[in-house]
Structures are given as C-alpha cells and as structure tokens.
Picture 1 (cartoon, rainbow, N blue to C red):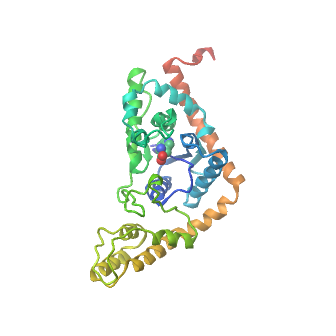
Picture 2: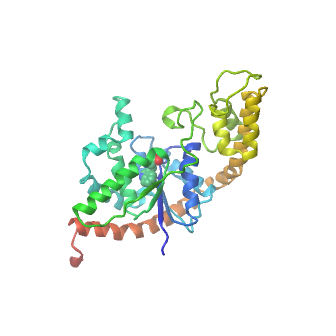
Picture 3: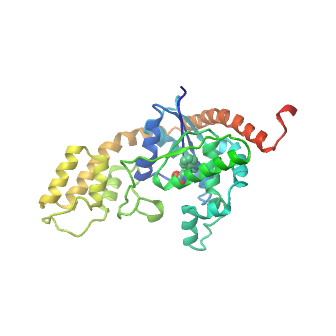
Length: 331
Ligand code: TRP
C-alpha cells in the first residue's frame, strides 16, 4: 500500500516561535518517517501583510533552515516555495468560484482583521486566504495536514471546497484531515494567553542563550514570594517546563512549588536551562545551515520541481473536468 501524504505550509514572517515549533514544525518533521511528506514556505500567503521583498526572501531561507535543523530530510521529504508552483493560484480561482462568501466571512482570521478595524489589514487576499490554502492542500492530493489548532478551521473549509467540487463536477479530490498534536495543545505565551505574534507574547525558537534567558525571565507569574506555597497547575512557567523537561524533573519542580521556599526565579532558571539544552544543538545546526543560502535555494528549487510534477497532472484533471483550457484531445 502506498504511503499517505502529509502536507503543510508555514508563512515566512520572521523567526517561528515555540508554538509554531511544537504545534507544527516538529510534528510535520516526525511524519516524514511514515508519510510522503510535502512541506512548503507559504510566501504567497505572507503577502496578505507586507513586509517587503527582502524580508520575504530572508524569512523564506530562515524557515527552510529551521526545518532542516529540526531534521527534515530533503532527499525524502519534498520542501519547496509555494510560489514556485504557479498552478496553485489557478486552482485557487477555480475553488473561489465554488466558495460561498458566507463561508469565508466566518473564518477566524478574517473576523479578527475586521475586529481590529480600518487598519488596511482587511484586504481581499486575507478574505480569500482559506481558498488559497485549500488549493495548497488539494493540488497535492493530501491525506493529512499537520497544523496548529488555529488552522483546523481552514482544513475544514478545505474539505467543504473539495466536497463541493466533487459534487458540482466529478469526484476528484480526497477530503484531507487536520492532524493536531494532542499532548501539546495550545502553547501559551509569556503572558499566559495563546502564544501568538499578534499578542506580542512569543518566545522565538532560536535565540542566543542570553536573549532566551531574558525572554524566559519575562514570563508572567502571580506575585507570590519565595516562601509561599505555589500552584503548579496555574503557573505559566510550569506549563512551558512540562514541554521541555523530563518526567522526573517535572515531578520535582511540582513538589518544590507545593512545598514553598522555591521562587519563580528558580523555576525560570530551570526552564531556561531545559529549553537551552533541548534547543541549543538545533540552534547550532540552524546557524550553520542558514549561512549557506545557495544550498537552501537548491533545496527549494529541487523541491519545487518535485512538487510541480505532482501538481501538473492534478491541475490538468481539474481543467478537463471544469472545461477550462484546451481539451485533452486537442493537445
Ligand atoms: N495558514 C497556515 C498558517 O498560517 C500556513 C499555510 C498556508 C498552510 N497553506 C497551508 C498550512 C496549507 C497547512 C496547509 O500557519
């Protein structure tokens, strides 16, 4: 039996944070073991907010080096730049024509942009974002989509669009399933809310040790003093510690919280050390990989060729079934 295909994308919008890493990057890399792994840098999606051409390119390399640093094997997995397969925009248009406005008006990303008011953020690209994302997924016949919780709605919309296409034309697309890492759940940021760039509470995945320590020291806690008994179940430091420390270390920090005489400063230092021990070796690899842009570009180009080889026949079928383009017999 052939392997199932896992597919996911990540926007090149700056250094990914711990939420991106634990929720998407690591699970996606793990899936390459027993899946046909297809991952890409969503540069087209990143244009919904402008950061400038130099940033888009830089961040594309950042993200590529990060995947490699965490173990993505480009000889097995296909890793490419979204815009190098232009068929995705063509499929997005076809799907657009099948997608009710009302469905898109319910998208969390769109609603949040509208709530922020007249900031210029509510452009058509943002409104149509879920359609392009559906095209990303359907163009490669994907089975599973490893994503953070916040992207589940988009994968559900993708299923709606695939199903609509299958009913209006002919059965063509598989209905993909989101895969959310359960034991990770929502990663909290330094203020205890969901870790998100829009809340300004993120911890970037690779920071030099000094800056990482500084970021950890900023994590908000309650105002209990050193001697006080503390609650390990409501503490932001403890929540992050559980993601980086081993079971014995976790148990002993929990005990120290309940015993008193253990301050948040101690806990933060332990958290910093656990994070640094876990991320440090990857950071070193990242720095070495990131320094070689022509190697990174080669990987993206090769991935683009392999991705396109999958996309072209699928788009051809879509043309045939919708009636656009020259009929096969005329070519
Ligand atoms: N929207 C995703 C995010 O912001 C990125 C993305 C674009 C994506 N296309 C995708 C993820 C297709 C999964 C599948 O994180």
